[in-house]
Length: 65
Image (cartoon, rainbow, N blue to C red; front, side, top):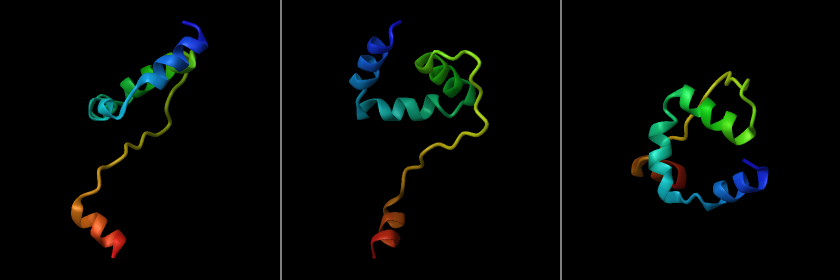
C-alpha cells in the first residue's frame, strides 16, 4: 500500500473508533502489528506501552477546582 493511501485511511478514522481501538490496543502485540503496518517496518518492537486512561468525573473535579 502506498504511503498516501495509508495517510488517507488514517485521516478517515474518527473518535467513534476510539473505544474499539482502546480495547484492541490493550494487547501489546496488536499495537506493534498496527504500527508495523502503518510505518511499513516489520522489525518494529515496542519497548513500553502506555494506554490513555479515561478520567472519572471526580478526577476532573480535582483538576479543575
